[in-house]
Image (cartoon, rainbow, N blue to C red):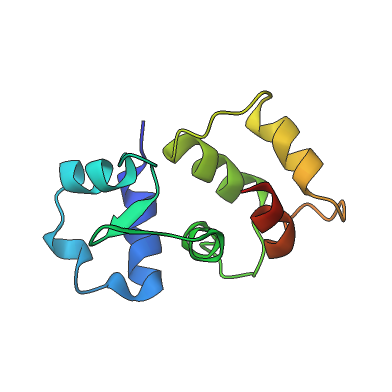
Length: 107
């Protein structure tokens, strides 16, 4: 299931503070479950960098395991392994975080 509160916080941090209160939980879920599962506003697909920033809730500039798991779960990303296994592979520096460039290559 989609963690609506997680995405409300992320959208607010991205500057959509004025829009977030007007969205119902169902509307937010529908936005996240669009045809390519990456629609956020007015029929515009998010690119990898925007998507990365959306899920980088602590604004560290990297994705930790929790943030990555939210991303693959909430966007229903099909993986040929578990989210934890994919995270380990994408964490090329073995730092416990996925760098933006590594995420963009994968996405």
